[in-house]
Amino acid sequence: MPSVEESLEFIKTNEIKWVGLQFVNIDGQLQNKTISSKDFGSNAFSNGIGTELDEIFGYTGKRLTLVPDSDTFARIPWEPNTMRFISNIYSTDKERFMRDSRYSIERININAKAMGIGDVQIGTEIEYYLLDSVTGDKTVPERGSNYVVDTREALWNPTPFWNSKNGAFMSQPQDSFYAIRVQIAELMEDQFRYTIDSHSHGRSPNGQQKMKIRPYNAKIAADALITFKHIVRNILFIANGVATFMPFPISGDNGSALNINQRIRKGIVNLFYEEKGDFGGLSQTALYYIGGILEHAEALSIFTSPTTNSYKKLKSDPRYVTWSKTNQNALITIEQSEEERSIVYTGADPSVNPYLAYAVVVAAGLDGIKNKSEPGKPIDENILGMDNKKMKELKIRTLPGNITESISALESDNKFLKGFISSELLSEYLEQKLVEHKENEKRPTAFEMETYFNR
Image 1 (cartoon, rainbow, N blue to C red):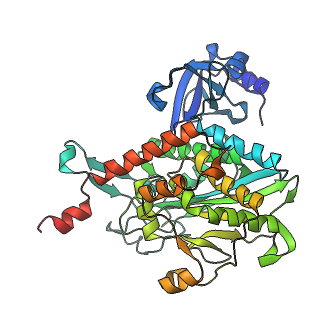
Image 2 (image 1 turned 60 degrees about the horizontal axis):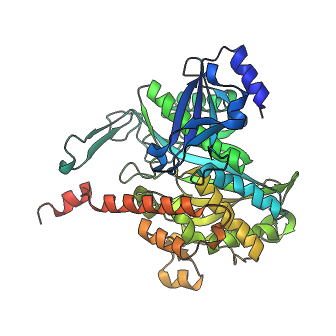
Image 3 (image 1 turned 90 degrees about the vertical axis):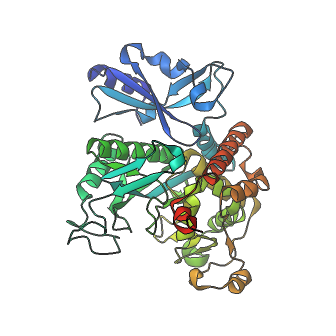
């Protein structure tokens, strides 16, 4: 990764005029402050750039500084003479700002190494939609929100090409966004140094896409996802289109998932793989890790399904609190390649703040290792076809059905997050989520208008 000196030399050699200091709010939305390169030197990495952030985090009672991370420097190819750094947030007394969610992910590897178990790596498989237009009537909120989503691939358009209800792995010319996906993948690799393992059309024929980012150290993995979403949105904006990472944007269609692929390495050794291990090469460490995630599954939901829309996605494509080698509706599945054996958490969606979502899932897994939590036997039967009696016999639980249920689950099970997420950040996050839930409950939906208008 680039050093401070290499970053500064790049700015000088390439006559960079502007430096963007990127950071995220509690929701994980990317924020940015751009300064002149004339005011950017080595002192920025030691003392930071003073910034008022009350508009982002509410009243803080202190002046904060953005301290750029030299590992994240990259030239922004669609902006003239501009570079970016993802930044950590400090107070002026050089202590970390406790509401900076990036600090939570940094605590992951600190805790893992303190336990003597090595480096946590995370790979990301993300689904999202590329659309040609989204228009809405928001002039008078009391009238209700009406949105029209359109994409060249939509089945509702009069085209002879787009006639399949299954878009998974669709090829060109039906896969009309192929060239844009390639451009996004190459920008990720060539400009931002994050490797893309694969990309394809998504399950929905209506513009859904899928991309898989190679596993990295947990913090770098979260940086990669934040960067990926930034690239996608900007490339679609330039192309007069629009991208959405909303979990369930089109009624009756496939929702978008975020699979969190996890493993722990100690040097070059994958601690989740054991040649003679149970269940196809899983080590005992891996089983304890799975057990921890399953034990705290309900408490994780407010971070991995953080929006009111997330629960609509889960209702259309449910996940059950169990693990499996083959069943995609299980909360935990197993990556099958041997030396790269990994645990896949399937209960997240792209609306997450990855610094928080990745941190809490790994925290649950580490807690399982610490407490030697057994996951039970894997369930490879079709869970969707089971009745409640059979699910109860197999001890298969369901995830919370909405934000308030998720908050309640976390309130009764949060000790495993101690040392990872500050009480200040946790309190602010939960309060914000509760406000979102209450605001959503106040508004009539299109379904309600259709169903109840004439009653």
